[in-house]
Image (tube, rainbow, N blue to C red; front, side):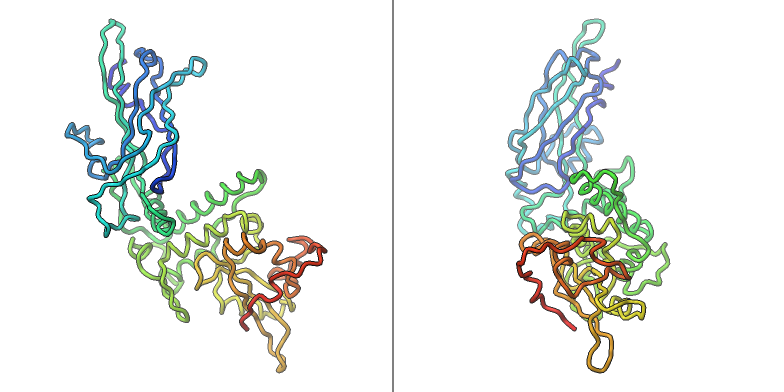
Length: 396
């Protein structure tokens, strides 16, 4: 077995968070695949981790011997390896890591959420050959790309950078080169994958083992296409570029929107895959991807009874869902559809859950198109309490 094997055998089992907030603790785990080969396990080695930029990452990949430039300071960044005699695993567990300082040369005006860095792991390992000759080799590896943020408001932009990189990067690339444009159908497929992944995480966290995550159907894809191109009659091979995805404001005919396509998508995904909506979304009872005007057309259909309602994602409030409901006709006999004030994760957490909202609002009778609400959410509790939704604003 050659020293080359020991150089390439260090793998990262637990990656650091790809969106990493400064001064927030995180952990990593590495494993050496050779383990007891070349007597590596007999000599515990010290693994260190540092933050590096794209240029330095390229030096690491090219085995460049030039001095590396670190881009920040990580607390508790040196740990000794350990060997398990039973499992024969040689591992390095790095816990209580914390990025306390970033490169001051980045400056205050740097576009933080678009800058990709990574963790650089290195350790001198002592090996012993069958001839009893000994040598020391330095193993090096890097993590997946990371975006550093300093506060929560940068989260969605940082997540967009990481999503684009994970979705469209190629094998054996130079760190961290990525294409700037992709076909629409591929983008929609990747958005579907991340939506299902986030939904699956919530399903597993709540141990709903028989529940399948619901992704983006044709209605959702048509809606998202219209968000990107202002109309839905678009060739699926039409390309979507990075600026269109992450930078440009979403255009709406009636309301002035000041957020990007990704920011809009990310926040409704975060809402839908949260504990407040995930189960009822997966069950197919959240319509979601429909505009205000289209929801009125659906609910004014002659087959819909008074009290029929649907949930739609707000187009004016980030990460919010609104209820549109068919109400009693006006004095002229015209069907009227009311739209209730949008709710967010915060309002569901602080005031009332989505399920209790549906239970206690007497105006809501049927999930669109004709499903009695008690079949979905059960009967309202007879607690005698007055719901705050009694006075929930409605726009006719």
